Image (cartoon, rainbow, N blue to C red; front, side, top):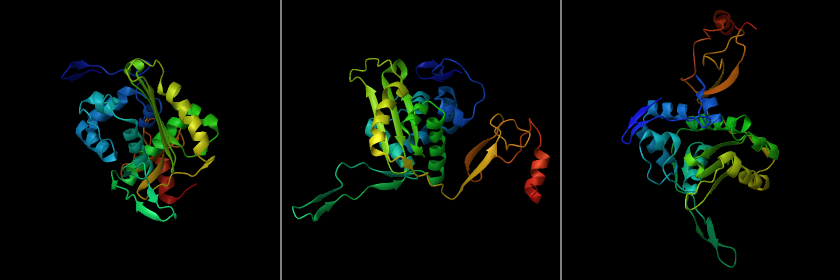
Length: 277
């Protein structure tokens, strides 16, 4: 794929320099494939994505070109990124970070309380679907080694590695806690390590100390539905599909057509219509 930009033709590459054909959005995010991210940003448009990033808590200037939006080439602080993931964990509600929650006098009486600056940055349904996708990053994707710390329950997160290995990132969260880690040199020398190699182990060490072993599940809001689909076609799975996965959708966006490759759709329609087992 080649895109025209102000700097000339640009051809994004995946980390392994390979193309992987048709993949689901979930698989692309779990494995940190760059090309599907660029395709998605191209389809949605860069300006709405930049506006959403600012609502989520990113205050730095973000370029509205495909590279900046899809692959994160703009410079932002760890605080901003962690706050943005916190908004996703918080049902789409962005809360401006504060270092002081309250002050008390020598008798222990509260003198001042911080008033959180909160705004609904994105829908609870959109935040939940993204969280579900990011759970897969830890279950099967680039952050799967986080499972060795023994957390039982719902944990979501994302690794990140910039071109030239200058920066290594990992942000992971539960329904209560969000932790962000960045590793790199101030002079932007190459780190020569990925996010999963450099940042994830630090996150794991801290998570062991502050996250309880039995993590509650993320609450599914109204307006989100679950469907069994065929991962090859993205259509509703039938009994003839060799593989089925359970996927979440914002209600109204779920597939309505049964798998046209493996067949069995007529029986599935009858079964759902008349309640056959």
